[in-house]
Structure formats: C-alpha cells, structure tokens
Length: 306
Image: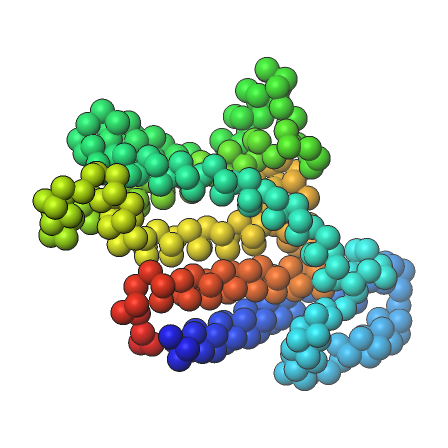
C-alpha cells in the first residue's frame, strides 16, 4: 500500500508542475501586464523601468524558475486589479463560497444518484427504471446555464420564492446547488445503475441469496462495495470540479466563488490572481484524486502499483 501511495504522490507533484508550466507560458502569451499596471499616458521609459523592477525583462525560463519558487511559498505577487493585496489571498477569500456551494450540491446529488441508480438496477425494465433513465438523460442533456436561467425565471422572478443571485443565507444556495447537482445526479444515476446491474448478475450475489440473506443485506454487504470503485472515481472528479469552481453556474447566479474569480481575472487580465486561482484549482483536483486513489486500496486490496 505504501509504495502505491508514494507512486501516486509523485505523479501528483508532476501534474502540478505541468499545470504551473502551462499556466505560466499561456498567461505570458496573452499580453503585457506592465501596460495594465501603468496609466495610458505612461511613456516607454516608465514601462521599461517597471519591467526591470518586476523582473519581467529576464528570459522566460528564468522568470519561470522564479515563478516556481514563489508558488512553492504561496507567493504569486500582488493583484493587478486590487493593488496591494496578495493574489493568493483573493483566491482564499473566495474559496469558502465555492466550498459551501460544493457541499450543498453533494449533500443532495450523491444520495439521490445512489438511491435512484440502485432502485433502477434492482427493478430493471420497470416503470421506475424507465423513469430514472429518462430523467438521467434529460439531466445530462440540459445545459447548466439554461437550467439556471429557467430556475431563476420560475422560482425567483415569477414565484418570488428564492433569490435570483448573490451570496448570503441558505436560501441563496438552493438554485445554484440544484443547477450544479442536476448534471452530476443524472450521470451518476446511470453509472450506479450500470455498475449495480452488472454486480447483481455475479455468482457470489446468487450464492448470497441462496443462503437466505435478505435483499437489503445482499445489496449493502456485497453489491454496493463491489460496484463502488467506478462510482468513487467519478465522484472524486465531481468533487474536484466543484472545489475548482463551477464557472458557468457561479457566473449565472453571481456566486462569489473561485470559478467566477477566474473569469473576472481573465477579463481584467489580472495575471497574478489568475495564476494563483489555477494553481489552487489544480491542488484541489490533485488532492481529491490522490485521496480517491488511497480509497481504492481499501475498496479493493488487489490494487497495486501499475
């Protein structure tokens, strides 16, 4: 188990380094940040002086080494939009909003997917199975921005039951959490149904039933754990995506999370904040997937370093 974890940890470090390399060079290809920091009337001498002060006159490889050193310390420089404020602090200030939205989404979408998928697998070709399948197809087909707008028009504008946007009390999280969770619930329902249907046809399930075990015991003790690995994989990716910020949903509902911060940083060409945001999102993805890889060793002891 320990060699497996060490291997996955090394792979995670390589992934983070690759993300930092990509974001650094892509950001540097989008434009000159010096022109953003100085007023339009600044002359070329002022531009060159600030460029030297910030070390942007150095070759790109040397700038990247400095960038890596700063990233290792959590120092991405100061925000170009919010002068005097560290770039990483802008991300950490927005993260609680994203975390709250992710938690609210998972609280309802994951149990719903497990319940619907299991019922559909146990009662295959029944009305419930067909209804769950159609609902899952619709949930995956509807664009999140369209669903979000329809929910706003229905529950905020016409009925006046919920706020249309913003960040505040529990009522503010209902619409964005449902919008986000609709896709995850639909896809995971299909995945659970497929995995559970395959497991229920295995010989050890027939043996368990032949011994006189109740259907609930057969499902909980034997079926669920054996179909859990693909589900855990997808759920891990979902959590990473949620913690990385749901860009479209956060924009539609004006939710002040790190996904919307990334869009604002791109529009304002706030490169330090964008780099810190992407680095934070990469850490969320890699950290969650590393945890999921460790969970594999518990779900299936046969998992070893490949």
